[in-house]
Length: 207
Image (cartoon, rainbow, N blue to C red; front, side, top):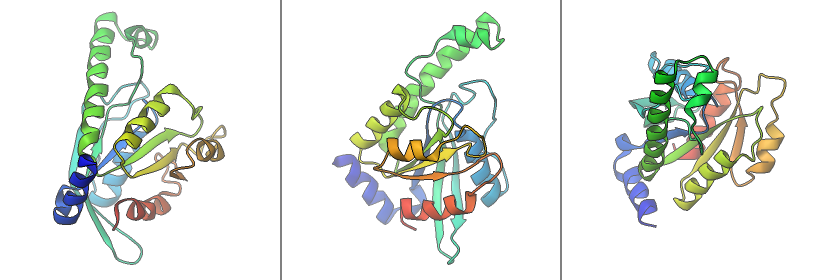
């Protein structure tokens, strides 16, 4: 309840501090979506994208992002891109991806720290966009862990079902898995359905 009151107070009286977090498992497309939002609205990207898991291992934030709706409303927020949440991080997975052992152990350590930081930052979030790979099983332990943390904090959530441009993508599976949330299919990489996604952001954080 205290967290909810804190977020409500900040939303009502300090719009400039509104924090919108991007959460999800590794390689779901969080940073790609963050870059898409920032590129579309402020003309610059936020972070580096890679096919290797846990490329983002530290919190990245772009302040004062402003987007506009079709009817002229404006939404101002700080966009927070978080490291991918994982229930298990094994340095050997990085070695299998071609990384030297020393570097793999370093990345695993940084990734573990990043997961802890991501969960801590949830206490400061006014709303969250949960970015999920629409080609993957939605009932994973990681997804359930993230949703549990969001529900425990009563944080407003919009699910971005990413990678709908791929043949294996299934929007219906995600909608069935998380009926309590609005689920919108997008391709952060190619911009598919991105304008509809922006309109949904106004519903999420009350523009």
